[in-house]
Length: 302
Image (spheres, rainbow, N blue to C red):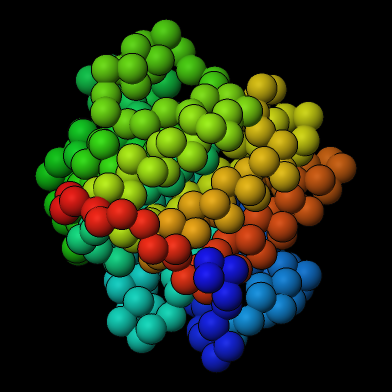
């Protein structure tokens, strides 16, 4: 049964990547550190049946160029995630920026892997179209093989995930060029509050191609009225309960190979609601990673 959790305690390796634009403990990087040290979050994960170990990626020379800093940090993250996976631990990354995805996915490998990505934003720009100069908005594009090829290939184990093997849920805060580019892609998109039937249909289609899942939750996927996770929070997103239901449903179909919780900036969480939401999401991810997926019709390769 999908809800039957393994009785034997396994290691969940909580890997803190506390960086924003390659700088340690700045903006959303502070949030990763805050979550990694949160005793309630750790206790809830252990309650889900895990033995939790923690480690943090070492910083780089901050005098280096931003993109060089970030790329080196991705290399270091890929090595740590790989070691965790080889040891039989579940890699759970707490990260400032979403482009941490490249290190996490490189660490677990793309064989049979799809991505379920919750975010108010597409993170799908490439250098030819981006106007903000914000490297982090290119994370999903790079993960699917667009932009910065030479740098991506320096990340040990990096291979792109096919666009058709990605579900982007809760997306809504887009510039016109971003909306157009996403519409032209093969990424499966469930916008805004996440329609349940559309989400389940996307999972069914994805399950024809992959058996493992990288689970990515940018905390600003939540509706801004539910929790203000960072300066980019936007209205029109899912409730916390809806997001948790989506994570649970995905784990009934796929083996969760690795997960990341990103983009929490405590400076914008005046009520503490985003921190509370992060704890509940982390707990659901931990439970989902222990869940045995249901048996569904045969999957096609790749």
